[in-house]
Image (cartoon, rainbow, N blue to C red; front, side):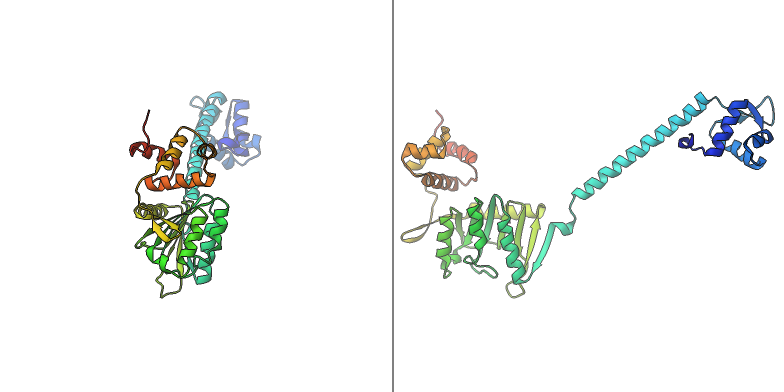
Length: 326
């Protein structure tokens, strides 16, 4: 019963015998416990080390038991203290383990994909796995997947995934460039144009990105970047290019890059009603416009303001004087 405080059966029996008889010498204790005298003496010395027994100063050669309430209480208190320290150490180790498990290893943050087939498959998977938004920088020299071959883009937009795409001006000169851009705009994608993008890039939901890893002369390879500081850097690069690019529209005469010349009268009516709390459907009915027309005008206003949310649009509308506070 006293094993919890470090006593085995022999030591416990010796202590119980001393408590029972009050005092005993080595030979007497050896007979009671059927031990050899050396074993009995070792047991008494062990009890002495625990503060449970002592040699009687009044009767040399005899041993007496320490009061159980005092001696055992002290040992139990010490044992509780040791257990508390062990519990604290266990808790700290558990927390350290959880922190290590939550912190992804470096090799889990990036992966290298090599070969045309593997790169193409990963590129399509990234778009098909997107739930909210895909951002892309597109060059005029596709290597693995062209716009016509990118079936995942149409599937993703069909599920409601937003696309923001910046293309190099050379894309407009590709054989199917205008056709692909017209299809993208028809899917309500936001497309902008710059003279040159710094790199090919696609980002899905700001949680996964893909960039080319080698030059066009080597075997196609790409770096897939998971959520990390590197991913934030790539997202910042995209936003920087996006802000500098010009919105693109396609009319009957061909391509035109929308200049930020400000909203027209209908745009201001739409904006005013939205800020008044009307829904897109209510605004469309109020102004006798189609719902898609209203939504397209709102997107154009957001592009003109250089913002990505309607909340930001409202703030910029007041700042730019498009609407006034009454």
